[in-house]
Image (cartoon, rainbow, N blue to C red):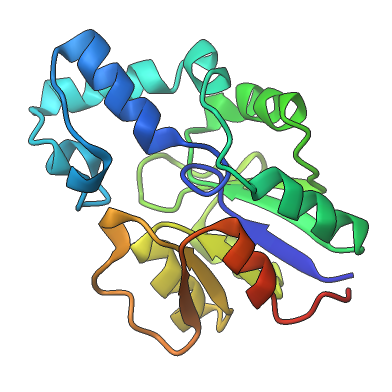
Length: 200
């Protein structure tokens, strides 16, 4: 059985758009999706340190996470992959305390998944070796294919884990992502067509 690595935020769910909704609703700041040219939302939107911390606190509340809509086509493609016999591994860089609402979100939207990894992708929290693992520990797992939006993780997976990566096109990943194992796709239909093998 081949295991497929699938990121969560801005790959399965429209997290950045939800960030923008919160920024306008709670901070009175309005930005467009195309203005998010930096992976760090705080940097892209020129937030103060306090504003960034408050934004992340709000967006990671269970109720907010559950309200984020899925990205068109994502659930359908994962259901097709699962039906074809692929093992679906959800690999997220969310804080460990978001585990339960993240699982609830996956179940709410019928997202097939065999495993969920919370990985300290960006040095934001301390891995405990069980529910939350380090990037080094992630390398102990084998995946045939990855779907990511993060330019940092796309390059890590391609260069360090020698893994083909489908990069879902986003304003924040349009530079510094040149690698022979990284391919850019504009939607999940393109990603489904590019899967190296449709057979497990």
